[in-house]
Amino acid sequence: LAMIYNMTGTVVAMTHVLLPFMVLPLYSVMRTIPPQQMRAAESLGAGFPLAFLRVYWPQSLAGVGAGSLLVFILAIGYYITPALVGGQSGQLISNFIAYHMQTSLNWG
Image (cartoon, rainbow, N blue to C red; front, side):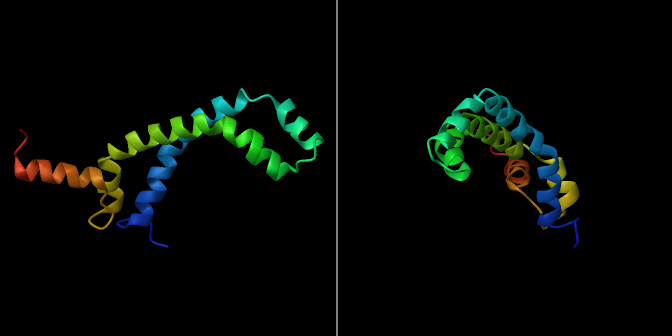
């Protein structure tokens, strides 16, 4: 499996760098959810998957949104990692924005 000069290597490298920026907001939100709510849902007859989907998941959506927004903003600004790891075939939108801004020189 080739991991350099292609999109696969770019995705793996960016996932490796940006994963903590998604995990930390999720962890901080999930830590505030009381475990008694899951136990109460299970004691009322919901299985673990249903209790997770109906009780735990909706309360953790704030962390999912915050982490997704943070990762999106950071990923849009990535310029060096796709250029070094991806080469010509692993270009992302930040590389295209930089290329067109440098070639057009029409900034206003």
